[in-house]
Amino acid sequence: MRTISTATPRHPRRWSLALGLVTTCGFLSAPAPAALTTTTINSGTLNLAIPDHTYNGSLGSMTSSAITLPAHTGTITDVNVIVTMAHQHISDLTIKLMGPGSATPITLLNRPGLTLFAPHYDDGTGSGGADAGLANLYPITYDDQAPSTVSSKNMGSGLTAGQVVGDPGNTSPNNYRPNAAGATPGTLANFNNLTLPASTTWTLYVADSNGINYTGTLNAWSLTVVTSEIPEPATMTLLTSFAALALLRRQPQRRRIGL
Ligand SMILES: [Ca+2]
Ligand SMILES: [Ca+2]
Image (cartoon, rainbow, N blue to C red; front, side):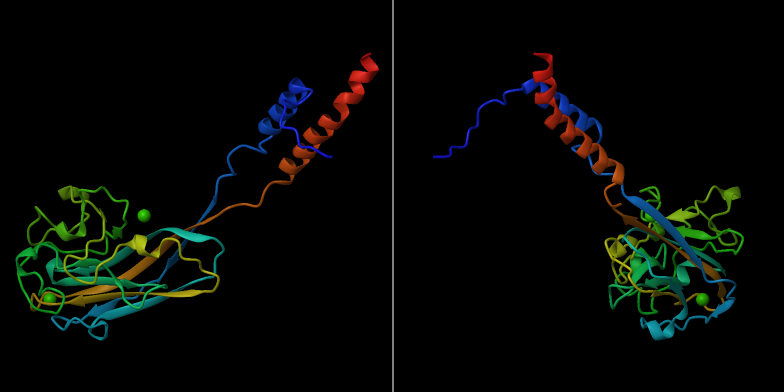
């Protein structure tokens, strides 16, 4: 009757040698690191007017711009947005991004400094808030990885009317974590783990809620998407693995020759 033995191999040193070779060659080591691809799509110059005090909470009442991201392999690991616009009063502004995978947008910026009026500041009501402005010269980046202390909810904090966000002259940062501040929730990480096997449409929405006669324009915006793909096992790994197995088969023969 055939039995299965769990005893120590007859040639433990040879097994160790072969196992060492296999491990050294990467067969049992950690998988190869994922390959990251970064793609940036720019809207080009838009110069779209943002109508004064016309937002009512609907996407239809917002100025919009759509761009197309080509198909990708891999899955999304990061999304960043850069918005170039001029405006006289940032607390009038709501900025949202609609991408694939959801029927609702995420909010990048909403009425900064207007905390006293929640929850009514995603429907065109409320006034006050941060008095600073935006300038085309200082594009604003919305990035989940911005310093944790820099939230778009507090954009313009410490600045006065006439100063612009992102101006290094007033030490104002130009890189912010999105903060819904009572509007449609979500962060750019909402897009993580999506796959993009076909081209996708991404739409930026901008609206002005108040500050009558404080207006502005959307000059341009860009979308940066990082995708990750696990590479196929390398041919060299397979070859070295076969070489190690061949060594195992050759060991007994070499022993007999030695005798
Ligand atoms: Ca990011
Ligand atoms: Ca306004």
